[in-house]
Amino acid sequence: MQSYFQYRRIYRQLEKQIVVKHDKPDNVWTRERRYSYYEGEIRSEPRELDESEPARRRREHGQRTLISGPALHPRHTTRTHLERDGDVERADYDPEIQGEPHTINSLETLGGTLDMMLTGVERRRPGSAEPNDMPDGAADGAINGESVHKDRLIVVTFEGDCDPIDPHNWPVPRRLACTALLSLTAATMLWATTIDAVVFTPATRKLYGTDNFAIETVPTALYLVGLGIGGLFTAPISEVIGRNPVYIPSLVLFILFEMGAGLAGTPAQRMVTKGLSGFFGSAPLVCTAGSIVDLWSRVERVYAFPLYAILTFIGPLVAPTPGSFVAVAHSVSWRFVDWMTIILAGIALGLFVLCMPETYSPILLHWKAKQLRRLTRDPRYRAPLEFKRVSFLHRLAHAMYRPFVLFATEPIIMVFAVYLSAIFIILYTFIAGYVSIYEKVHKFLPTQTSLAFLGVLVGVFLAAPFVPLAMKLVRKDILRSRSQGRDYLGPEISLYMSMFGAPAIPIALFWMGWTARPSISFWSPIGSSVLLGYGVLCVFVSSYQYVAEAFEYHAASALAAVQMLRLISSGVMVYVSEPMYRKLGIAWTLTLLGAIATVFLPVPYLLHRWGPIVRRWSQHAQSEQE
Image 1 (tube, helix red, strand yellow):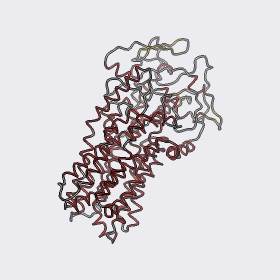
Image 2 (cartoon, helix red, strand yellow):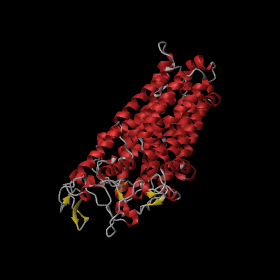
Image 3 (cartoon, rainbow, N blue to C red):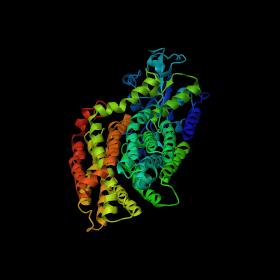
Image 4 (spheres, rainbow, N blue to C red):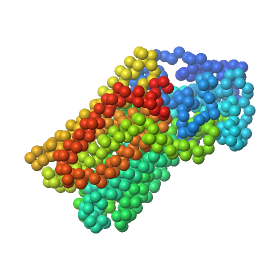
């Protein structure tokens, strides 16, 4: 619904620009340039911007931002949209021989002919012949398989760096609201991974007919595997048709299969439906990180990604508390854990339909081009996404195998997939040990044990005060880079949070492993869980931000490739963690996890130093030369 209104707003905005009854204006002044119409062409020259703080901030980030001080160049400029690889193999348009586009901010136009009033479009090349009208059916820059000459097309782009259509320039409260909705929707998908764990005993008696813990955990394990595999398909689709056309159907199917899990009458039925609900729940989980990239500039993501991660972690860490009360309640069935998940997902679906606008910029430019063709009846207006010699189905197929290619060939993806897999194996095995630690060692009731999960959540929130310190270090890197005459900074600036938090993980594991005994207060393992939550949050934020910035044009696909191994590994550990605690004991299980965490401890420090070299081995990651 919101996307539909957004589509209509673009139409109305463009409609206001098209004024053909006035004379051609001699001078049009905007925030960026001075424009004039001379001998059939638009000419422009830069205007002197004032040196006020709003003007400096606008030059750094665009029209609206909550960040002040030095920043990196904005992502969504006209040039980046013309040069981006997008979701295709090649483009008919050659940006190397094209001058900078003539654009006028639509909020400040004074009236004039169609050429002057249409903003955010490329005009024909100086000295080229007047383009002929493109015949009907010349979609994607081709006619009957033959490419249309590039001079016949007009490129539709953003209006410089301050275009209000660009999601990076939306008002800050609107972007924060979108981020909160995306985060809480992802939290709902992870909520379902832990809420089942506390009702295993009632489930055993009423459905499984066995006390075998391994059999009880299969639905949760399959759900995690479904989350990992599903992202490989849903993420690249969102880079072809947009974010909302993936979010909304996926949420609907997730709700339907969760309903099937809640109504399942046999273990096999529950296993299948939970696996399928995980497959479709992957879209709101993996694509949300891509939407964060759509909404925030690189420096703003230093704040945006921690907010996203903190809200996302609320789901799996809070879920055991209401689940434990359902397990002991006599007034409701244990199946109410599924109904709670469905209620949360239904709320998220309603908010997405009513409130969530489309954020993927290539799709927004595609809408703008369609509206221009509709208003002007001129088929030459094309978005960068349409300058392709391949069909939609070919582009979709090309996008679908991209996550597999990234996972198999990209060293950065391999490094972070293994690193995050180790971290989440540790986290889920750690959480699985709560029953052994608190119920068997400290004689907690199930509801009291579920409250102990909140210690990890406290640690997650304690990571927030370190974000300004990370931003301060990023600022220093930017100033140092500019003093050396370099405009590009690699994604290594995203690793500060993980460098702060990585040592906390092995410390927390050794701490809990050797203090989880009846002679030591239960507050000791709770304190270690706080430290673990802090460390995991820091590593998660930095890893996602690094991958998103290294593969910015394909952020969703790259994160899907990372997420696949992480979630499949977590699903396996849900299945094997209880036997580990039973056979090795609490101390040695957590010691083993601490040793694994120690092995991976140097990863963020090594990447901060040698990351540029690793990225030069990559075919898809951005490098300093770009």
